[in-house]
Length: 604
Ligand SMILES: Cc1ncc(C[n+]2csc(CCOP(=O)(O)OP(=O)(O)O)c2C)c(N)n1
Image 1 (spheres, rainbow, N blue to C red):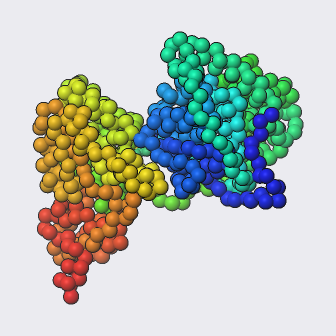
Image 2 (spheres, rainbow, N blue to C red):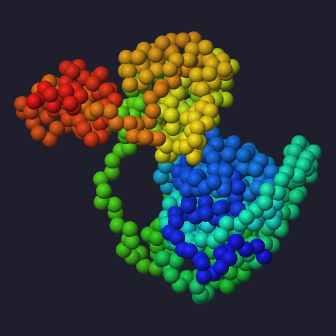
Image 3 (spheres, protein in one colour):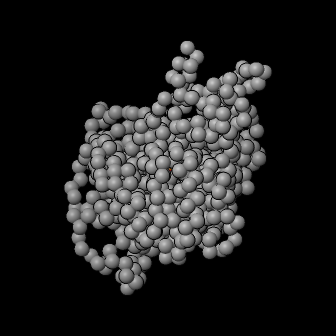
Protein backbone atom coordinates (compact mmCIF):
# COMPACT_ATOMS: atom_id res chain seq x y z
CA UNK A 1 0.00 0.00 0.00
CA UNK A 2 1.17 3.51 -0.75
CA UNK A 3 1.59 5.78 2.23
CA UNK A 4 2.62 9.39 2.49
CA UNK A 5 6.05 10.11 3.98
CA UNK A 6 5.90 10.64 7.74
CA UNK A 7 8.34 12.04 10.28
CA UNK A 8 11.24 9.74 10.93
CA UNK A 9 11.25 10.24 14.71
CA UNK A 10 7.80 10.47 16.26
CA UNK A 11 9.00 12.55 19.21
CA UNK A 12 10.40 15.19 16.88
CA UNK A 13 7.12 15.87 15.13
CA UNK A 14 6.49 19.58 14.82
CA UNK A 15 2.99 20.94 14.40
CA UNK A 16 2.65 24.21 12.57
CA UNK A 17 -0.32 26.38 11.63
CA UNK A 18 -0.43 26.61 7.85
CA UNK A 19 -2.76 27.75 5.12
CA UNK A 20 -3.82 25.08 2.66
CA UNK A 21 -1.53 26.67 0.08
CA UNK A 22 1.47 26.58 2.41
CA UNK A 23 0.60 22.99 3.28
CA UNK A 24 0.50 21.96 -0.39
CA UNK A 25 3.96 23.48 -0.79
CA UNK A 26 5.16 21.73 2.35
CA UNK A 27 3.85 18.41 1.08
CA UNK A 28 5.87 18.90 -2.07
CA UNK A 29 8.95 19.88 -0.08
CA UNK A 30 8.70 16.76 2.06
CA UNK A 31 8.18 14.63 -1.05
CA UNK A 32 11.57 15.79 -2.28
CA UNK A 33 10.35 18.03 -5.11
CA UNK A 34 13.19 19.65 -7.02
CA UNK A 35 11.20 21.78 -9.48
CA UNK A 36 8.09 23.82 -8.57
CA UNK A 37 6.54 25.98 -11.23
CA UNK A 38 3.26 27.77 -11.92
CA UNK A 39 1.46 30.91 -13.00
CA UNK A 40 -0.16 33.15 -10.38
CA UNK A 41 -3.90 33.10 -9.87
CA UNK A 42 -6.13 33.32 -6.82
CA UNK A 43 -6.51 31.12 -4.82
CA UNK A 44 -3.28 29.28 -5.77
CA UNK A 45 -0.62 32.02 -5.78
CA UNK A 46 0.88 31.55 -2.31
CA UNK A 47 1.85 27.94 -2.94
CA UNK A 48 5.00 28.86 -4.84
CA UNK A 49 5.58 32.09 -2.93
CA UNK A 50 5.78 30.17 0.35
CA UNK A 51 8.77 28.14 -0.87
CA UNK A 52 10.36 30.72 -3.18
CA UNK A 53 13.37 31.19 -0.97
CA UNK A 54 14.36 27.56 -0.54
CA UNK A 55 17.71 26.95 -2.12
CA UNK A 56 17.08 23.21 -2.53
CA UNK A 57 14.17 23.65 -4.98
CA UNK A 58 14.03 25.41 -8.34
CA UNK A 59 10.89 27.52 -7.79
CA UNK A 60 9.74 29.73 -10.65
CA UNK A 61 6.92 31.57 -12.35
CA UNK A 62 6.17 30.66 -15.95
CA UNK A 63 4.55 33.07 -18.38
CA UNK A 64 1.42 30.91 -18.45
CA UNK A 65 0.03 27.67 -17.11
CA UNK A 66 0.75 25.61 -20.21
CA UNK A 67 4.39 26.59 -20.14
CA UNK A 68 4.41 25.78 -16.43
CA UNK A 69 3.05 22.29 -17.06
CA UNK A 70 5.49 21.78 -19.93
CA UNK A 71 8.35 22.75 -17.60
CA UNK A 72 6.99 20.42 -14.93
CA UNK A 73 6.60 17.53 -17.37
CA UNK A 74 10.08 18.10 -18.77
CA UNK A 75 11.53 18.08 -15.26
CA UNK A 76 9.60 14.93 -14.42
CA UNK A 77 10.89 13.15 -17.54
CA UNK A 78 14.36 14.33 -16.54
CA UNK A 79 13.85 12.34 -13.36
CA UNK A 80 12.97 14.85 -10.66
CA UNK A 81 9.71 15.26 -8.81
CA UNK A 82 7.89 18.35 -10.06
CA UNK A 83 5.00 20.42 -8.71
CA UNK A 84 2.88 22.57 -11.04
CA UNK A 85 0.43 25.12 -9.59
CA UNK A 86 -2.39 27.16 -11.08
CA UNK A 87 -5.91 28.39 -10.48
CA UNK A 88 -8.79 26.46 -12.01
CA UNK A 89 -8.99 28.44 -15.27
CA UNK A 90 -5.26 27.95 -15.67
CA UNK A 91 -5.91 24.29 -16.33
CA UNK A 92 -7.89 25.31 -19.41
CA UNK A 93 -4.69 26.91 -20.68
CA UNK A 94 -2.58 23.90 -19.69
CA UNK A 95 -5.17 21.35 -20.81
CA UNK A 96 -3.46 20.54 -24.07
CA UNK A 97 -0.35 19.29 -22.30
CA UNK A 98 -2.36 17.82 -19.43
CA UNK A 99 -4.44 15.56 -21.67
CA UNK A 100 -1.44 14.11 -23.46
CA UNK A 101 0.79 13.96 -20.37
CA UNK A 102 -1.72 11.34 -19.27
CA UNK A 103 -0.49 9.30 -22.26
CA UNK A 104 3.24 9.88 -21.85
CA UNK A 105 3.12 9.25 -18.14
CA UNK A 106 5.93 10.61 -16.02
CA UNK A 107 9.58 10.10 -15.20
CA UNK A 108 9.62 11.09 -11.54
CA UNK A 109 6.36 12.15 -9.83
CA UNK A 110 4.38 14.98 -11.41
CA UNK A 111 1.63 16.67 -9.42
CA UNK A 112 -0.64 19.39 -10.79
CA UNK A 113 -2.51 21.60 -8.34
CA UNK A 114 -5.78 23.10 -9.53
CA UNK A 115 -7.08 25.68 -7.02
CA UNK A 116 -10.76 26.08 -7.82
CA UNK A 117 -12.76 29.14 -6.85
CA UNK A 118 -16.41 28.28 -6.11
CA UNK A 119 -18.32 31.51 -5.65
CA UNK A 120 -15.94 33.31 -8.03
CA UNK A 121 -14.29 35.43 -5.34
CA UNK A 122 -11.74 36.47 -7.95
CA UNK A 123 -12.40 34.52 -11.10
CA UNK A 124 -14.19 34.81 -14.38
CA UNK A 125 -16.09 31.54 -13.92
CA UNK A 126 -16.58 28.76 -11.38
CA UNK A 127 -15.84 25.65 -13.39
CA UNK A 128 -15.44 22.41 -11.45
CA UNK A 129 -12.04 21.04 -12.45
CA UNK A 130 -12.78 17.55 -11.21
CA UNK A 131 -14.13 17.05 -14.72
CA UNK A 132 -10.57 17.33 -16.07
CA UNK A 133 -9.48 14.26 -14.12
CA UNK A 134 -12.15 12.19 -15.78
CA UNK A 135 -11.45 13.62 -19.21
CA UNK A 136 -7.73 12.91 -18.92
CA UNK A 137 -8.18 9.61 -16.99
CA UNK A 138 -5.85 10.99 -14.34
CA UNK A 139 -6.23 10.38 -10.59
CA UNK A 140 -7.76 13.18 -8.55
CA UNK A 141 -7.18 13.93 -4.88
CA UNK A 142 -9.36 16.36 -2.93
CA UNK A 143 -7.95 17.50 0.42
CA UNK A 144 -10.43 19.04 2.85
CA UNK A 145 -8.04 21.00 5.11
CA UNK A 146 -4.40 21.99 5.58
CA UNK A 147 -3.31 18.71 7.16
CA UNK A 148 -4.70 16.81 4.21
CA UNK A 149 -3.37 19.36 1.74
CA UNK A 150 0.12 18.46 2.91
CA UNK A 151 -0.43 14.72 3.24
CA UNK A 152 -2.29 14.33 -0.06
CA UNK A 153 0.26 16.37 -2.00
CA UNK A 154 3.08 14.20 -0.69
CA UNK A 155 1.05 11.07 -1.39
CA UNK A 156 0.21 12.30 -4.88
CA UNK A 157 3.89 12.02 -5.82
CA UNK A 158 3.93 8.38 -4.73
CA UNK A 159 0.75 7.68 -6.68
CA UNK A 160 2.19 9.46 -9.70
CA UNK A 161 5.25 7.21 -9.74
CA UNK A 162 3.43 3.99 -8.87
CA UNK A 163 0.92 4.40 -11.68
CA UNK A 164 3.13 6.38 -14.06
CA UNK A 165 0.69 9.26 -14.38
CA UNK A 166 0.37 12.94 -13.56
CA UNK A 167 -1.87 13.41 -10.52
CA UNK A 168 -4.37 16.24 -10.16
CA UNK A 169 -4.86 17.69 -6.68
CA UNK A 170 -7.91 19.93 -6.49
CA UNK A 171 -8.27 22.46 -3.71
CA UNK A 172 -10.98 25.09 -3.36
CA UNK A 173 -10.73 28.63 -1.98
CA UNK A 174 -11.58 27.69 1.62
CA UNK A 175 -9.06 24.86 1.65
CA UNK A 176 -6.40 27.04 0.00
CA UNK A 177 -6.82 29.98 2.37
CA UNK A 178 -7.98 28.48 5.69
CA UNK A 179 -5.32 27.72 8.24
CA UNK A 180 -4.98 24.49 10.18
CA UNK A 181 -2.43 22.47 12.09
CA UNK A 182 0.00 20.47 10.01
CA UNK A 183 2.53 17.94 11.25
CA UNK A 184 5.86 18.45 9.62
CA UNK A 185 8.04 15.60 8.45
CA UNK A 186 11.53 15.49 7.03
CA UNK A 187 12.24 16.19 3.41
CA UNK A 188 12.95 13.11 1.33
CA UNK A 189 16.31 13.18 -0.33
CA UNK A 190 15.67 11.98 -3.85
CA UNK A 191 18.34 11.48 -6.49
CA UNK A 192 17.93 12.87 -10.00
CA UNK A 193 16.88 9.75 -11.90
CA UNK A 194 17.89 11.12 -15.29
CA UNK A 195 16.06 10.98 -18.60
CA UNK A 196 15.62 7.60 -20.23
CA UNK A 197 14.93 7.87 -23.93
CA UNK A 198 11.73 6.10 -24.85
CA UNK A 199 10.17 7.55 -28.00
CA UNK A 200 7.29 5.06 -27.97
CA UNK A 201 6.25 6.57 -24.65
CA UNK A 202 7.29 10.18 -25.01
CA UNK A 203 6.81 10.99 -28.69
CA UNK A 204 3.07 11.19 -29.15
CA UNK A 205 2.77 10.75 -32.88
CA UNK A 206 -0.47 8.94 -33.75
CA UNK A 207 1.13 5.50 -34.02
CA UNK A 208 2.62 5.75 -30.53
CA UNK A 209 -0.38 7.54 -29.02
CA UNK A 210 -2.67 4.74 -30.25
CA UNK A 211 -0.56 2.25 -28.33
CA UNK A 212 -0.59 4.43 -25.21
CA UNK A 213 -4.37 4.81 -25.11
CA UNK A 214 -5.00 1.24 -23.84
CA UNK A 215 -2.21 1.77 -21.30
CA UNK A 216 -4.09 4.80 -19.97
CA UNK A 217 -7.30 2.80 -19.60
CA UNK A 218 -5.56 -0.19 -18.02
CA UNK A 219 -3.93 2.18 -15.54
CA UNK A 220 -7.36 3.53 -14.67
CA UNK A 221 -8.48 -0.01 -13.80
CA UNK A 222 -5.40 -0.50 -11.63
CA UNK A 223 -6.14 2.77 -9.85
CA UNK A 224 -9.72 1.62 -9.28
CA UNK A 225 -8.35 -1.38 -7.40
CA UNK A 226 -6.02 0.90 -5.45
CA UNK A 227 -8.70 3.33 -4.38
CA UNK A 228 -10.97 0.54 -3.08
CA UNK A 229 -8.33 -0.27 -0.45
CA UNK A 230 -6.86 3.18 0.00
CA UNK A 231 -6.95 5.02 3.34
CA UNK A 232 -7.93 8.02 1.22
CA UNK A 233 -11.50 6.74 1.52
CA UNK A 234 -12.49 7.21 5.17
CA UNK A 235 -15.58 6.22 7.11
CA UNK A 236 -17.03 8.24 10.00
CA UNK A 237 -19.99 7.90 12.36
CA UNK A 238 -22.63 5.22 12.62
CA UNK A 239 -26.31 4.58 11.90
CA UNK A 240 -28.34 3.10 9.08
CA UNK A 241 -31.08 5.72 8.59
CA UNK A 242 -28.95 7.72 6.23
CA UNK A 243 -25.40 8.09 5.00
CA UNK A 244 -23.53 10.99 3.43
CA UNK A 245 -20.79 10.90 0.83
CA UNK A 246 -18.53 13.93 1.01
CA UNK A 247 -15.35 15.28 -0.52
CA UNK A 248 -13.17 18.35 0.01
CA UNK A 249 -14.33 21.18 2.25
CA UNK A 250 -17.93 19.92 2.11
CA UNK A 251 -16.84 17.14 4.47
CA UNK A 252 -16.23 19.59 7.32
CA UNK A 253 -19.51 21.39 6.71
CA UNK A 254 -21.40 18.10 6.96
CA UNK A 255 -19.62 17.16 10.17
CA UNK A 256 -20.40 20.56 11.64
CA UNK A 257 -24.12 20.19 10.89
CA UNK A 258 -24.41 16.44 11.57
CA UNK A 259 -21.48 15.55 13.86
CA UNK A 260 -22.54 11.92 14.32
CA UNK A 261 -23.71 11.19 10.81
CA UNK A 262 -22.48 8.18 8.95
CA UNK A 263 -20.09 9.55 6.35
CA UNK A 264 -17.95 8.12 3.59
CA UNK A 265 -15.32 10.71 2.77
CA UNK A 266 -13.66 10.49 -0.64
CA UNK A 267 -10.06 11.68 -0.55
CA UNK A 268 -9.63 10.37 -4.08
CA UNK A 269 -12.62 11.28 -6.16
CA UNK A 270 -11.38 9.96 -9.47
CA UNK A 271 -11.50 7.13 -10.04
CA UNK A 272 -14.19 6.45 -7.44
CA UNK A 273 -14.10 3.54 -4.98
CA UNK A 274 -17.36 2.28 -6.46
CA UNK A 275 -17.50 -1.03 -4.58
CA UNK A 276 -17.01 0.70 -1.25
CA UNK A 277 -19.60 3.26 -2.18
CA UNK A 278 -22.01 0.51 -3.16
CA UNK A 279 -21.54 -1.29 0.16
CA UNK A 280 -22.02 2.02 1.97
CA UNK A 281 -25.17 2.76 -0.03
CA UNK A 282 -26.56 -0.72 0.71
CA UNK A 283 -26.06 -0.20 4.43
CA UNK A 284 -28.19 2.95 4.74
CA UNK A 285 -31.83 3.78 3.99
CA UNK A 286 -31.12 7.14 2.39
CA UNK A 287 -27.93 8.24 0.67
CA UNK A 288 -26.81 11.87 0.21
CA UNK A 289 -23.91 13.36 -1.67
CA UNK A 290 -22.69 16.75 -0.47
CA UNK A 291 -20.15 18.22 -2.89
CA UNK A 292 -19.26 21.76 -3.94
CA UNK A 293 -20.23 22.85 -7.48
CA UNK A 294 -21.16 20.14 -9.99
CA UNK A 295 -23.01 16.86 -9.29
CA UNK A 296 -19.77 15.14 -10.15
CA UNK A 297 -19.89 12.20 -7.73
CA UNK A 298 -23.69 12.22 -7.72
CA UNK A 299 -23.93 11.65 -11.48
CA UNK A 300 -21.45 8.77 -11.35
CA UNK A 301 -23.46 7.14 -8.60
CA UNK A 302 -26.68 7.52 -10.54
CA UNK A 303 -24.99 6.08 -13.63
CA UNK A 304 -24.01 3.09 -11.49
CA UNK A 305 -27.67 2.65 -10.49
CA UNK A 306 -27.22 3.95 -6.94
CA UNK A 307 -30.15 5.95 -5.62
CA UNK A 308 -28.87 9.23 -4.22
CA UNK A 309 -30.00 12.71 -3.18
CA UNK A 310 -27.68 15.62 -3.91
CA UNK A 311 -28.13 18.72 -5.98
CA UNK A 312 -31.88 18.73 -5.38
CA UNK A 313 -30.92 19.80 -1.82
CA UNK A 314 -27.48 21.39 -2.07
CA UNK A 315 -26.87 24.14 -4.65
CA UNK A 316 -24.68 23.68 -7.70
CA UNK A 317 -23.89 27.40 -7.80
CA UNK A 318 -21.44 29.09 -5.44
CA UNK A 319 -19.74 27.93 -2.29
CA UNK A 320 -21.29 25.64 0.25
CA UNK A 321 -21.16 26.61 3.93
CA UNK A 322 -22.45 25.05 7.14
CA UNK A 323 -25.60 27.15 6.77
CA UNK A 324 -26.18 26.06 3.19
CA UNK A 325 -25.58 22.42 4.10
CA UNK A 326 -27.91 22.71 7.10
CA UNK A 327 -30.61 24.17 4.87
CA UNK A 328 -30.29 21.18 2.54
CA UNK A 329 -30.52 18.65 5.33
CA UNK A 330 -33.44 20.60 6.81
CA UNK A 331 -35.25 20.26 3.50
CA UNK A 332 -34.50 16.56 3.62
CA UNK A 333 -36.11 16.49 7.09
CA UNK A 334 -32.94 15.49 8.96
CA UNK A 335 -32.34 18.64 11.00
CA UNK A 336 -34.25 21.73 12.01
CA UNK A 337 -33.61 24.84 9.97
CA UNK A 338 -31.82 26.35 12.99
CA UNK A 339 -30.36 29.78 13.41
CA UNK A 340 -27.83 30.70 10.73
CA UNK A 341 -24.29 30.11 12.01
CA UNK A 342 -22.84 32.88 9.91
CA UNK A 343 -24.41 36.23 10.77
CA UNK A 344 -25.19 38.59 7.88
CA UNK A 345 -22.15 40.77 7.19
CA UNK A 346 -22.47 44.16 8.83
CA UNK A 347 -19.86 45.87 6.66
CA UNK A 348 -20.90 48.30 3.98
CA UNK A 349 -20.17 46.96 0.53
CA UNK A 350 -17.77 49.12 -1.48
CA UNK A 351 -17.41 48.88 -5.25
CA UNK A 352 -13.90 47.92 -6.38
CA UNK A 353 -11.94 50.88 -7.74
CA UNK A 354 -8.56 51.51 -9.35
CA UNK A 355 -6.00 52.57 -6.74
CA UNK A 356 -5.12 56.26 -6.33
CA UNK A 357 -2.42 56.99 -8.89
CA UNK A 358 -3.05 53.81 -10.88
CA UNK A 359 -1.34 54.33 -14.26
CA UNK A 360 -4.13 52.35 -15.94
CA UNK A 361 -6.69 55.10 -15.30
CA UNK A 362 -5.70 57.88 -17.75
CA UNK A 363 -5.68 55.72 -20.92
CA UNK A 364 -9.23 54.62 -20.19
CA UNK A 365 -10.33 58.25 -19.82
CA UNK A 366 -8.84 58.77 -23.27
CA UNK A 367 -10.49 55.69 -24.75
CA UNK A 368 -13.84 56.85 -23.42
CA UNK A 369 -13.43 60.26 -24.99
CA UNK A 370 -12.31 58.66 -28.28
CA UNK A 371 -15.51 56.60 -28.35
CA UNK A 372 -13.52 53.37 -28.69
CA UNK A 373 -15.03 49.92 -28.62
CA UNK A 374 -12.74 48.30 -26.06
CA UNK A 375 -12.15 44.57 -25.96
CA UNK A 376 -10.62 44.19 -22.51
CA UNK A 377 -8.67 41.55 -20.71
CA UNK A 378 -8.12 40.28 -17.19
CA UNK A 379 -6.10 42.32 -14.72
CA UNK A 380 -6.49 45.37 -12.49
CA UNK A 381 -7.45 47.37 -15.57
CA UNK A 382 -10.66 45.33 -15.90
CA UNK A 383 -12.01 47.70 -13.26
CA UNK A 384 -12.25 50.23 -16.09
CA UNK A 385 -15.44 48.39 -17.05
CA UNK A 386 -17.08 49.80 -13.91
CA UNK A 387 -18.26 53.32 -13.18
CA UNK A 388 -17.06 56.00 -13.40
CA UNK A 389 -14.64 54.97 -16.17
CA UNK A 390 -17.15 52.63 -17.86
CA UNK A 391 -14.81 52.20 -20.78
CA UNK A 392 -14.36 48.47 -21.32
CA UNK A 393 -16.85 46.52 -23.39
CA UNK A 394 -15.70 42.89 -23.17
CA UNK A 395 -13.60 40.72 -20.83
CA UNK A 396 -13.67 36.95 -21.29
CA UNK A 397 -10.45 35.04 -20.66
CA UNK A 398 -6.77 35.85 -20.24
CA UNK A 399 -5.30 36.98 -23.54
CA UNK A 400 -8.66 37.16 -25.33
CA UNK A 401 -8.66 40.93 -25.84
CA UNK A 402 -6.51 41.03 -28.96
CA UNK A 403 -8.15 38.14 -30.80
CA UNK A 404 -11.55 39.55 -29.94
CA UNK A 405 -10.50 42.93 -31.30
CA UNK A 406 -9.43 41.25 -34.54
CA UNK A 407 -12.83 39.59 -34.76
CA UNK A 408 -14.68 42.76 -33.81
CA UNK A 409 -12.85 44.69 -36.53
CA UNK A 410 -13.59 41.90 -39.02
CA UNK A 411 -17.27 42.06 -38.16
CA UNK A 412 -17.48 45.70 -39.20
CA UNK A 413 -20.08 46.03 -36.46
CA UNK A 414 -18.21 48.28 -34.03
CA UNK A 415 -19.45 51.86 -33.97
CA UNK A 416 -16.04 53.27 -33.03
CA UNK A 417 -12.35 52.48 -33.28
CA UNK A 418 -11.55 48.99 -31.94
CA UNK A 419 -8.99 48.92 -29.15
CA UNK A 420 -7.74 45.88 -27.24
CA UNK A 421 -6.42 46.60 -23.72
CA UNK A 422 -4.10 44.09 -22.08
CA UNK A 423 -1.67 44.07 -19.14
CA UNK A 424 1.99 43.18 -19.49
CA UNK A 425 1.66 39.87 -17.66
CA UNK A 426 -1.41 38.94 -19.67
CA UNK A 427 0.25 39.98 -22.93
CA UNK A 428 3.12 37.59 -22.24
CA UNK A 429 0.69 34.95 -20.96
CA UNK A 430 -1.34 34.68 -24.14
CA UNK A 431 -1.45 37.93 -26.07
CA UNK A 432 1.58 37.58 -28.30
CA UNK A 433 0.16 34.99 -30.71
CA UNK A 434 -2.99 37.08 -31.09
CA UNK A 435 -0.91 40.15 -31.93
CA UNK A 436 0.81 38.14 -34.65
CA UNK A 437 -2.67 37.30 -35.90
CA UNK A 438 -3.63 40.98 -35.91
CA UNK A 439 -0.63 41.64 -38.14
CA UNK A 440 -1.41 38.63 -40.30
CA UNK A 441 -5.00 39.83 -40.71
CA UNK A 442 -3.90 43.46 -41.18
CA UNK A 443 -6.59 44.17 -38.61
CA UNK A 444 -7.59 47.76 -38.10
CA UNK A 445 -7.10 47.70 -34.36
CA UNK A 446 -5.03 49.36 -31.68
CA UNK A 447 -3.55 47.30 -28.88
CA UNK A 448 -2.94 49.15 -25.64
CA UNK A 449 -0.42 47.26 -23.52
CA UNK A 450 -0.71 48.51 -19.95
CA UNK A 451 2.83 47.81 -18.78
CA UNK A 452 2.99 48.43 -15.05
CA UNK A 453 5.94 46.10 -14.66
CA UNK A 454 4.16 43.48 -12.58
CA UNK A 455 1.25 41.08 -12.30
CA UNK A 456 -0.64 43.49 -10.09
CA UNK A 457 -4.01 41.84 -9.84
CA UNK A 458 -2.71 38.75 -8.07
CA UNK A 459 -0.46 40.68 -5.71
CA UNK A 460 2.53 41.75 -7.76
CA UNK A 461 4.27 38.70 -9.14
CA UNK A 462 7.25 38.85 -11.46
CA UNK A 463 7.05 37.68 -15.08
CA UNK A 464 9.45 37.49 -18.02
CA UNK A 465 8.91 41.17 -18.84
CA UNK A 466 9.92 42.41 -15.38
CA UNK A 467 13.55 41.35 -15.55
CA UNK A 468 13.28 39.88 -12.05
CA UNK A 469 12.75 36.29 -10.91
CA UNK A 470 10.51 35.00 -8.13
CA UNK A 471 13.59 35.11 -5.89
CA UNK A 472 14.22 38.76 -6.77
CA UNK A 473 17.34 38.10 -8.81
CA UNK A 474 17.92 39.79 -12.16
CA UNK A 475 16.80 38.13 -15.41
CA UNK A 476 16.81 39.30 -19.01
CA UNK A 477 13.56 41.26 -19.46
CA UNK A 478 11.47 40.77 -22.57
CA UNK A 479 11.60 43.96 -24.64
CA UNK A 480 7.93 44.58 -25.44
CA UNK A 481 8.63 47.16 -28.16
CA UNK A 482 11.05 44.81 -29.91
CA UNK A 483 8.59 41.97 -29.54
CA UNK A 484 5.70 43.91 -31.09
CA UNK A 485 7.95 45.14 -33.87
CA UNK A 486 9.24 41.63 -34.46
CA UNK A 487 5.75 40.23 -35.08
CA UNK A 488 5.33 42.97 -37.68
CA UNK A 489 3.53 45.87 -36.03
CA UNK A 490 4.69 49.01 -37.83
CA UNK A 491 3.31 51.60 -35.40
CA UNK A 492 4.54 51.01 -31.85
CA UNK A 493 4.66 53.87 -29.34
CA UNK A 494 5.59 54.07 -25.67
CA UNK A 495 3.77 56.70 -23.62
CA UNK A 496 3.79 58.10 -20.11
CA UNK A 497 0.19 57.53 -19.01
CA UNK A 498 0.50 60.26 -16.37
CA UNK A 499 0.77 62.74 -19.24
CA UNK A 500 -2.88 63.01 -20.14
CA UNK A 501 -2.44 65.12 -23.27
CA UNK A 502 0.24 62.77 -24.60
CA UNK A 503 -1.97 59.78 -23.84
CA UNK A 504 -4.92 61.28 -25.72
CA UNK A 505 -2.63 62.21 -28.58
CA UNK A 506 -0.90 58.84 -28.86
CA UNK A 507 -4.11 56.85 -28.74
CA UNK A 508 -5.78 59.22 -31.21
CA UNK A 509 -2.87 58.80 -33.63
CA UNK A 510 -2.77 55.04 -33.16
CA UNK A 511 -6.43 54.51 -33.97
CA UNK A 512 -6.14 56.57 -37.13
CA UNK A 513 -3.29 54.33 -38.33
CA UNK A 514 -4.37 51.77 -40.97
CA UNK A 515 -3.68 48.24 -39.76
CA UNK A 516 -2.60 47.19 -36.28
CA UNK A 517 -0.91 49.66 -33.97
CA UNK A 518 0.42 49.28 -30.44
CA UNK A 519 0.62 51.80 -27.60
CA UNK A 520 2.56 50.76 -24.50
CA UNK A 521 2.32 52.61 -21.17
CA UNK A 522 5.44 52.83 -19.04
CA UNK A 523 4.51 53.75 -15.46
CA UNK A 524 4.98 51.16 -12.70
CA UNK A 525 2.16 49.90 -10.52
CA UNK A 526 1.87 52.21 -7.49
CA UNK A 527 1.65 49.28 -5.06
CA UNK A 528 4.10 46.65 -6.34
CA UNK A 529 6.89 45.78 -6.30
CA UNK A 530 7.24 48.90 -4.11
CA UNK A 531 4.86 51.66 -3.11
CA UNK A 532 5.16 54.73 -5.32
CA UNK A 533 4.50 57.82 -3.20
CA UNK A 534 5.27 61.29 -4.49
CA UNK A 535 4.35 64.56 -2.79
CA UNK A 536 0.57 64.58 -2.38
CA UNK A 537 -1.73 67.24 -3.72
CA UNK A 538 -4.36 69.31 -1.97
CA UNK A 539 -7.27 71.47 -3.07
CA UNK A 540 -7.39 75.22 -2.50
CA UNK A 541 -10.99 75.50 -1.34
CA UNK A 542 -11.19 79.14 -2.34
CA UNK A 543 -10.24 78.25 -5.94
CA UNK A 544 -12.29 75.05 -6.25
CA UNK A 545 -15.50 75.56 -8.21
CA UNK A 546 -16.81 72.06 -7.33
CA UNK A 547 -17.06 71.34 -11.06
CA UNK A 548 -16.17 67.64 -10.41
CA UNK A 549 -13.83 67.36 -13.40
CA UNK A 550 -11.21 65.87 -11.04
CA UNK A 551 -13.71 63.19 -10.04
CA UNK A 552 -14.16 61.72 -13.50
CA UNK A 553 -11.34 59.17 -13.07
CA UNK A 554 -12.88 57.90 -9.81
CA UNK A 555 -9.72 58.37 -7.75
CA UNK A 556 -10.51 57.11 -4.22
CA UNK A 557 -8.35 59.87 -2.70
CA UNK A 558 -10.71 62.57 -3.98
CA UNK A 559 -13.91 63.14 -1.99
CA UNK A 560 -16.33 65.90 -1.05
CA UNK A 561 -15.43 67.98 1.98
CA UNK A 562 -17.41 67.53 5.19
CA UNK A 563 -17.27 71.27 5.85
CA UNK A 564 -18.94 73.93 3.75
CA UNK A 565 -16.88 76.70 2.15
CA UNK A 566 -18.95 79.76 1.23
CA UNK A 567 -22.00 77.58 1.73
CA UNK A 568 -20.83 74.78 -0.63
CA UNK A 569 -19.04 71.50 -0.34
CA UNK A 570 -15.70 71.52 -2.09
CA UNK A 571 -13.39 68.76 -3.18
CA UNK A 572 -10.72 67.50 -0.78
CA UNK A 573 -7.82 65.11 -1.35
CA UNK A 574 -6.72 62.59 1.24
CA UNK A 575 -3.00 63.36 1.64
CA UNK A 576 -2.26 59.91 3.02
CA UNK A 577 -3.49 57.96 -0.01
CA UNK A 578 -2.70 60.54 -2.73
CA UNK A 579 0.33 59.34 -4.68
CA UNK A 580 0.99 62.63 -6.42
CA UNK A 581 0.27 61.24 -9.87
CA UNK A 582 -0.95 64.67 -11.16
CA UNK A 583 -3.95 63.30 -13.06
CA UNK A 584 -6.46 65.45 -11.13
CA UNK A 585 -4.19 68.48 -11.50
CA UNK A 586 -4.32 68.08 -15.28
CA UNK A 587 -8.11 67.77 -15.18
CA UNK A 588 -8.83 70.78 -12.92
CA UNK A 589 -10.03 73.80 -14.98
CA UNK A 590 -9.56 76.47 -12.23
CA UNK A 591 -6.13 75.07 -11.27
CA UNK A 592 -7.27 74.64 -7.69
CA UNK A 593 -5.13 71.54 -7.05
CA UNK A 594 -1.64 72.21 -5.80
CA UNK A 595 1.15 70.31 -4.10
CA UNK A 596 0.63 70.00 -0.34
CA UNK A 597 3.82 71.88 0.49
CA UNK A 598 2.96 74.71 -1.97
CA UNK A 599 -0.40 75.09 -0.25
CA UNK A 600 1.30 75.22 3.14
CA UNK A 601 3.48 78.05 1.85
CA UNK A 602 0.50 79.92 0.39
CA UNK A 603 -1.50 79.50 3.64
CA UNK A 604 1.45 80.51 5.86
C1 LIG B 1 -5.95 31.53 -17.04
C2 LIG B 1 -5.81 32.47 -15.91
N1 LIG B 1 -4.67 32.44 -15.20
C3 LIG B 1 -4.51 33.29 -14.15
C4 LIG B 1 -5.50 34.18 -13.82
C5 LIG B 1 -5.33 35.12 -12.64
N2 LIG B 1 -5.01 36.46 -13.14
C6 LIG B 1 -5.97 37.36 -13.39
S1 LIG B 1 -5.38 38.73 -14.09
C7 LIG B 1 -3.82 38.18 -14.05
C8 LIG B 1 -2.68 38.98 -14.61
C9 LIG B 1 -2.75 40.41 -14.32
O1 LIG B 1 -1.53 41.01 -14.68
P1 LIG B 1 -1.44 42.07 -15.83
O2 LIG B 1 -2.01 41.56 -17.08
O3 LIG B 1 -0.03 42.52 -15.91
O4 LIG B 1 -2.38 43.24 -15.32
P2 LIG B 1 -2.32 44.08 -13.95
O5 LIG B 1 -3.18 43.39 -12.96
O6 LIG B 1 -0.89 44.20 -13.55
O7 LIG B 1 -2.91 45.40 -14.29
C10 LIG B 1 -3.78 36.92 -13.49
C11 LIG B 1 -2.54 36.18 -13.28
C12 LIG B 1 -6.69 34.14 -14.59
N3 LIG B 1 -7.71 34.93 -14.31
N4 LIG B 1 -6.81 33.29 -15.62
